[in-house]
Image (cartoon, rainbow, N blue to C red; front, side, top):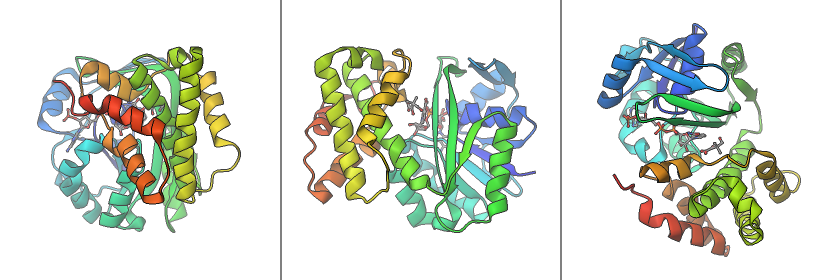
Amino acid sequence: MMNVVVMGAGAVGGYYGGKLAQNGESVYFLVRKRRYEQLKQRGLNIESIHGNFSFEPNLIVEPKEVEQPDLVIVALKNYHLEGAMPQLEELVQQGAKLLPLLNGVEHLDLFIEKFGKENVLGGLCYIESTLNEKGDIIQKSPMQDIIFGPLTTQDSSFLENIEKMMKDAKIAVTLTEEILAEIWKKFIFITSLSGITSAVRAPIGVALEDEVTQAFLRNLITEVYKISQARQVEISGDMVDTVMERLKSVSPDLTSSMHKDLKKGLPLELDSMHGYLLTLGEQYNIDLPCLKAIYALLHPYKNGQN
Ligand SMILES: NC(=O)C1=CN([C@@H]2O[C@H](COP(=O)(O)OP(=O)(O)OC[C@H]3O[C@@H](n4cnc5c(N)ncnc54)[C@H](OP(=O)(O)O)[C@@H]3O)[C@@H](O)[C@H]2O)C=CC1
Ligand SMILES: CC(C)(CO)C(=O)C(=O)O
């Protein structure tokens, strides 16, 4: 059995780690002091559209508490990464491979540079989950997909074991050789969705109902797609139409984790998402008026209000 470390027992890590632990996998939740106290006291409680569950998580505060870590599910916010790097480094030195599920692509370059492609898998997730004021995880929409894959040659049985472990835990998982394209497809989707829902301060249905806002959204998607093409990411089909159709097909109540964080007064992953795209735009000399507008509108709130 694999030893899985979940770094970031929040809305994403707590949910997926919880599903694996519930299914009898060996899961360690590497947490900081405040979350340690909270989870020790209350346990990990997941209120999910797929069925509620609660359990006592196996909490650790130091990487050395795991004898042989095989896989680290990294589910931190991008702005937490710097503080977490020494522990991630320790885990990699102990033999673990990293599977980041963060939104964005900037962290991937950072991980590859620091740890080498052979120690990092590409990954992403589609899930709408959030923490309530007690630290419990709330999941109201059904998606719970993880897509992952190798960035370089990897032992295929290791990858298949991860896939099987997740499937057995009823996580909708896809193992792909095209992980970079999948990461970019998610990036195009999420920077558009999070940008528009946060700027409008409403779920996606509101932006789609208004002709002017819908047209802005389409232009926003087009801008991010252009950057992916400048980066030579292979994405087949009409990505702008695909994203528009996907946004129209989801519940009008769907909103982004960025919009939820904005409402809670928490910091936003603005620099690693829209800010990062603007940096790439400058590099490739692409005009990005919609992205610039989104970035400017959200900038006052990027460090949170608490
Ligand atoms: N929520 C969602 O619906 C989705 C989120 N994502 C992405 O997934 C990533 C994680 O998001 P989400 O789960 O919502 O974020 P949360 O804020 O809910 O969880 C992040 C967790 O990381 C913990 N943390 C921070 N630093 C450390 C550290 N050094 N060691 C251990 N734990 C640490 C925080 O704990 P504490 O501060 O309490 O110590 C917190 O519990 C983001 O990139 C997000 O964009 C992707 C898809 C959907
Ligand atoms: C849109 C969603 C919920 C899909 O995973 C997401 O990734 C986010 O809000 O961060």
